[in-house]
Image 1 (cartoon, rainbow, N blue to C red):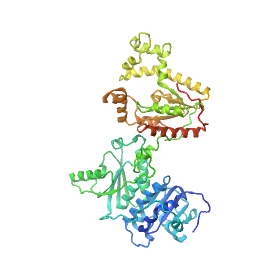
Image 2 (image 1 turned 120 degrees about the horizontal axis):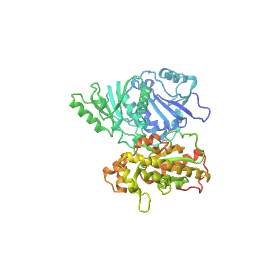
Image 3 (image 1 turned 45 degrees about the horizontal axis):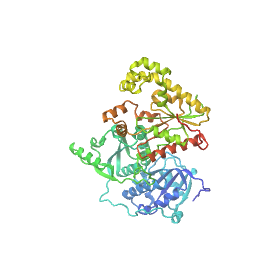
Image 4 (image 1 turned 120 degrees about the vertical axis):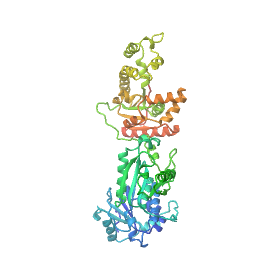
Length: 541
C-alpha cells in the first residue's frame, strides 16, 4: 500500500468500502473520523459488495449503511461534500460511473492488494487514472481509533423490502444537503427503471423560512440531476417543477412507490387518496427518517434542513464584495435598507455601537423640508399652502396624508426630495471622510428606489416575512390588517431587495440572534478592509 508521505490533506478523496454491510455499521464513525484527517473538500464513498464475502447483494442493508454514512458525515465531516456512489452496490456488478470532482487519494476499509484496488476503480469509474492517486489502508488505524458516539449495529428490518420500476418523490431541494441525499439515495435503491422528482416552485415555497434566499429552480434542478447521474447512471431520471403536493404522482399510472419523509407522510396519503379517486393503484409509501442537525444552534431546526442553511447565510456574503469604480476608497459606504418594520434601524444602531458612523437618510430628507432649502419651495409650489403650518413650516403629517396611497403624488414628492437628500448625504459622507471615518452606513428605506445605492460600496438588507411585518405595523402604528398590508404593498418586495443585497439580515427571531448576525458581518468587513480596532470616531447623523 502507498501511504501519504506528509500531513497535507487531499482536496478530493475516495473511500472504498468492501466489507459486508452487517460489519460496516460497527465502524462507520471510526472510518469517517479517520477520513476527516485526510480530505478537506470532496469525499466519494463507493460501496462495492460485489467482492464482499457475503456473495449475493441485499439492498436493504446497504440502504441502511448509506443512510448512516450521511447521518454520521453531517457531524464528523460537516464542511466536506460527501457523495455515496450506489450503482455497483445495487447491481453487484461493475457499472461505469463518472465522478465530477477529481481525487488523488483512495482510502480502503480493509487491506487489499494494490492491483485489486486499481482493478475495482478502473472497472467502475470512467476517468480513473491509477497514476494520479495514492492508496491508503485504514484497517489498522480503525482498531486504534477511539469510538466517536455509539451507533446501533442492528440493521433495520422491514416486513418486506420491495423494489419498483417507477418511483416518485418531491421537495424543494434547496442547497442540496445530506438529508436530501438520503432521500434521493433511498429512492435510487428502491428503483429499477425510472425515478421522477418534483422540484417545488411558486406557492409551494413562499411559506418556507427565508424562501427569498432559495437558489433559482434551474440551479436546484441541475444540482439534483448532477447528483443522481453521478450516484447511479443506470436509471432514467425525470425532473420537473411542481406547484402542488401532487405533481406527476397523480397522472403517471406507471408509478408504484413514493418516497416521503417523516414530516410528509400525510402528503403521501393525500396522493393515494387522489389516485384512488382517479381509479389508479395506490403507491407504496417508503418513509425516510429525518437526519438530526448535529451542529445546531438556536433558533435553528433540530433536523438537517435547507431552512437552517439559509439561516446560516444571514450576516455573511451571499455574493463577492463588489468593487465600484469612481467611489473613494475611504470611507467605505454601506447602504442599509429594508422594508417597513424590518428592524433596519435596530441593525444600524448595532453597527454604530461596533464602530460605524451612521447617516439616517430619513432625517436628511426632513432637512430638505426646512424653510430656505431648495426642496421647500418646490414642495409648496407642487402641493399648495395647505401643507404649511401657521409658522410657514411644512407639516409632514398633512403632506403624508396627501401622497400616501396616491402614486402620482408620491412620485411627484419623491422627485423633489430624493435628489436634494442625495446632495446632503454626499456632503455628510465627504465630511466623515475628512474626519478619518473608516465605515459609513446609510440607513435608508428607499435606498434602491431613490438610486442612492450609487453612493455605496455595497448593499446590506434587512427583511422579515410579510405576515410578521403586518403584526409589527399593527402593534406600532395601531392600524388594522388591511391598512398594514397596504403599507407593505406600497414598497418594493423583499425579493427585489434581496436580489440587490451583498449581505442579508433578518430580525424575525430574538434580538440576540440579530446581534449575532450583525457582529458576524462586521467582523467579516473589518477583516476584508484590514481595519484597525474600533476607535472613538463613530457618530450618527
